[in-house]
Picture 1 (cartoon, rainbow, N blue to C red):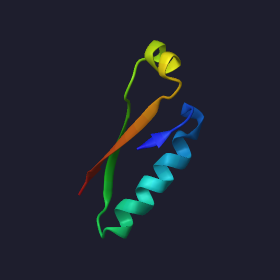
Picture 2 (cartoon, rainbow, N blue to C red):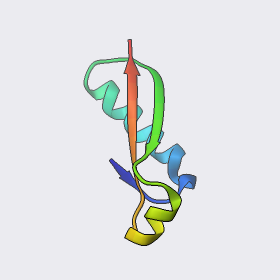
Picture 3 (cartoon, rainbow, N blue to C red):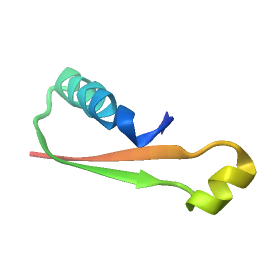
Picture 4 (cartoon, helix red, strand yellow):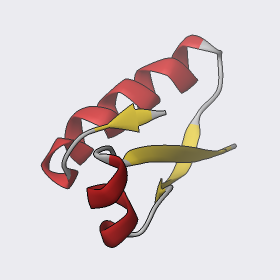
Length: 56
């Protein structure tokens, strides 16, 4: 799980790719999912991002 603005997406993608490679797998596709809507994120003060990796 990641946290921060969407401008960090490239950094998160690199981190996920390194993790997948470290597990001996090959990354096929990467999906990003925000856990809350923008209005709720503002109310809670945080907006977590989950990355899903499709592997070969």
